[in-house]
Length: 406
Ligand code: ASP
Image 1 (cartoon, rainbow, N blue to C red):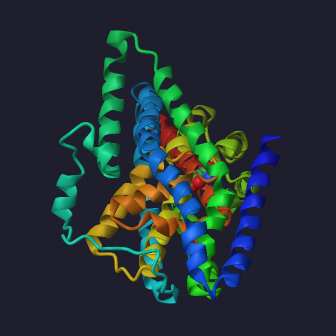
Image 2: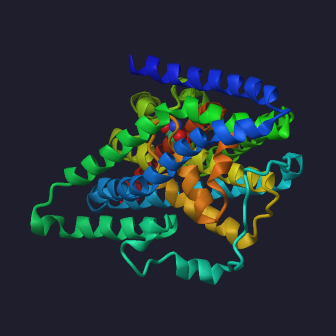
């Protein structure tokens, strides 16, 4: 039933996309109508996304940290898992940024005026970015929607919570409940996606003509290229070198989970099947039952790639060239955002708002990619769950060798 509902939403979004194109073409002679009367409803949708993203990041990262409280118990497994997850995610977003930058010549610069962007007067350098990550006020990060500061705050509070838990007999459920509330609100907002997509895309097509749509195919192609490169290069290398498993065997064994992830666009929904596949491929039961649920919560390589590619795409649509320090900020934000991205359909798009905000790119740019988010999502979820399993294989092998040495 749940599955049916999700598919229905994606069908609705697709229909909205087609209608937006038709209406947009119809308004090309008089785009002001679309801009003045249709776009405001799209703005409402975007405002809701902006509104929920801060508490969502705050509580979901905290829930992610709290879910790792067993790290101390599982010791080596936990440490290795987190290091593997963070490194592969940083690598993923770097691949996305690199390839999208190499190919950005094929992305258009939009002539649209309503997607206006005013670059900030001050240029940011790396040291400023570094200092700027740490908040000096508890409330201000939320008021300014400063994502990196919100992430730092939630990490600190999350770890503090773990450390005082024994002393105060704390029930971590509070964090889960707060996280669930934000997730539910996000789900409700995402239900408005068809209206949002229609109202945002229609004025863009009206102002730029239907040629803008060709660019969507191009950005999808770049994202899928990165997904494949990351999976084939990074996961093959790690399962081969660190996990001592043939990459062909690995991908073959993962096929059921991959297909499930592709059709459901949900890491969490694919979790049971993913555990089965990983165990059949030789991962220890104990390791998979820790590594995979954690991965479905905090490890999102595909989502990180998507965010890198979309950031470059949106920047180039606005005629902006990202600086090196902005790209470093994107690597950092997308890596940390991956901790806070829920393993459900569409969550990565909400987090894209945060990545764009972290480098001062216009969140309105999401309008350009929102209509085809489901297609991005299917691919990124496949990468997300494959990354989790590769980690289970690698960590299992490391554990076996550790025990053999003992
Ligand atoms: N749908 C993705 C997943 O479940 C998350 C995302 O939207 O990027 O892994």
